[in-house]
Image (tube, rainbow, N blue to C red; front, side, top):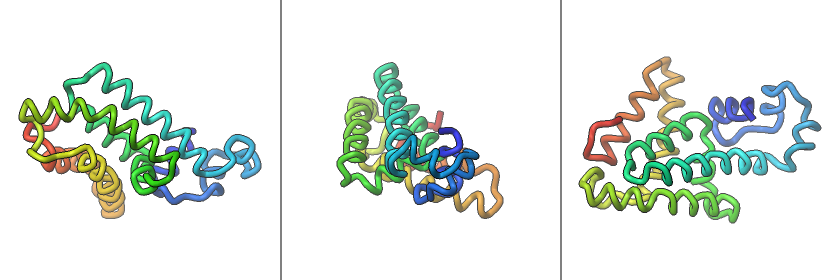
Length: 166
């Protein structure tokens, strides 16, 4: 699983089984013994990501900014939230999108009430920043900038929130 996260982070959501198997030092046959398809692997990793977000949201219901930065870290780490967002019409990935929406909506509503997010920001707006952030990370890396993740966090925080980035 760690190797697959590295490959997704490095190469984006459109990777091959061969790249993941090579990174994990296993054969393609071993991969297919564990996962029927690449989407099955992505779904397993997404399940872990969604559970992490749900757990955080239930423990920190008044911290939309921190919840957002957790999502952003996940997106920058493995790019799978971007894949889920892009494939949200597929029943499997739509379920994950719906669960993330359910976890974030109460926190976003409280952040609106407290004036912590810009007026009109929706969960869909929040989610749409994640693939953009992943693309920004790739651009920073190709340009040799090593401050990329911090800079990305700051830029997207300013776009969504009225507060200082955590």
